[in-house]
Image (tube, rainbow, N blue to C red; front, side, top):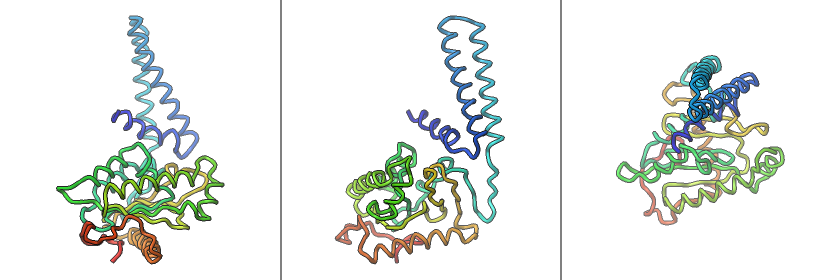
Length: 281
């Protein structure tokens, strides 16, 4: 099952989120060739037809060569001026998201910060990002991960407008499901998970103490189809600092309204530790 998930996570972005119709058609052709080869081999083995088996193997080799060529031709250049990388879609940056979660510091308040309309990759999706987050929250000998979420308030005017414009998804229902999952995490991991709802949040952000991934939200595409920017804290571009302050200002604003969920009523129950860059002081 794990291997099937990895293949799915590798292939889906190429079929649903490429940058051009030509690229989409090319990857669809690759999948068709590969499936024909696989079923051809199975049929040839069952019928014991040597020529059919040979033809299927050759078709499989052709599909492999086509896939390799497509990977070479359509893999975008990703120059890293001042520590900035660009991915064509968020789906194609899943390994980066998983790394940000996996490498977040422990015993630090707000070590992992996630903001989005719904944050489905971390709360609802069946993928390695969600698995990694839940595994990190369970850590004990190494220390405890502390994470903060900012989601769009499903009762806000902004959510209502998005719900009308985003005809491919039920935005408010999706946010509500994410909130239910967040409440479960708060209950299962007291003092480790905090979240707030903001009335006007229009972008996606995920960051730890050294790396930041962000993108705007479009009403014409899902978050996974949106281009993203990844910034490293140590490369001196200034973009990491902007993202850190962006999250902090919204968090502080909602904290001032007493709108933080998951914070223990008794401070003695909280996981003690320093504050991450961009967290509350």
